[in-house]
Length: 488
Image 1 (cartoon, rainbow, N blue to C red):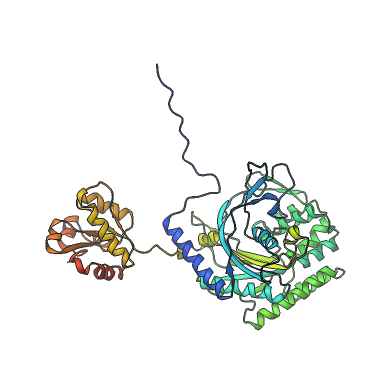
Image 2 (tube, rainbow, N blue to C red):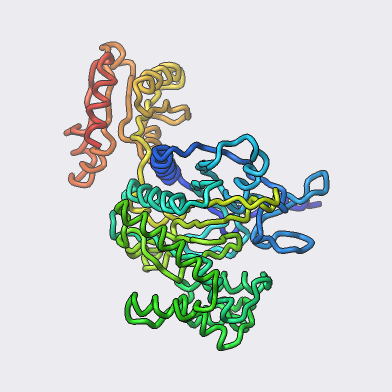
């Protein structure tokens, strides 16, 4: 009688998620440290919030349905309350400020870094789990707070190696669009339709004018056949909005005249222009002109909680995907003013503005510029009984600031060298009985050995030359390793 075969799970990744290698993690760590230094130099303090929040605390983007999992990953706890993985780092900040409003110094200035999760369709450089780095100022309506955040964003991007001219931060004001919507006849209290309009416009760079026009109307079917319902605007309403975000003006002056004409009867539109002028004046006076921050009506940001100025940073150089094709990468940082978010908890309007760098997206774009882990040294074990000596030698190297590991497997010496090669080690240390008797250790320069192996006709010839191997005094181990690593 045969037994049923055991059922085994399939080894697979959920769509939109990925495993990450040591090199990428090291690059992210270096990126986070660089941004942290910039933000702290401006006087911002760190804040850490949990991965889960009560779902009703997460923000206006959540739909009012029985299972609130559109856009977020949600579950019920043992108290029958909905919890969601944080969608961003801003909504948790609003909850924190509301909780501690009476005791924190205002303006409250904090930065935060961490993982966020979005239950959305993945795409090039878009994952369902990724890292963000935020900075926010809560409690100030002064345009200087907005301008400072934009300056800090530029400084952070340049500290990460992005030269001026390789990126641009685009600045707009949602009040200008509110004015256009008002003139176009989209009611201020029609929040569902307004949200659909904003999300449609936010896809302008990716879908183009025709794609946005479809989303402003009845809807759009993408290449996969999925249909996205549109805002249901008339042709005239859609034309007015597109004239604002995708103008056919031949220059900036004509564009500004079009905007003035579009919002001529809207008080909120005029207010938005005044706010923009104040921010731009501060930026120009501080040396952050249109080569770093420029006005662009196409920036609206999809989230509904933005109430005024909004901004988005984009790369200006081609980004290649894994197939080597140039792709439209989209924004690598964004933010804006959200004066109503804290009021969801307190009932009191609290001015606030923030910036967010999509660390995972930026790393994906800068994959050719990634940092690397420190060079690795592998200390071999001549036989199983020598494991203690290998561990002690590795510890000596680590105490001197060198990244080192002792081989703890069961392979013979040849297997250990193959292991070191696979680990990408720079040096292998050998301390066998002959070396110990003479007070020596042997250092194999694995990187040099690999190059030599390419240029000689046989392994035997390379072994005879032994140019990538040297024996040194055990007391000089650290100094000799450092000397070799200095050439890697």
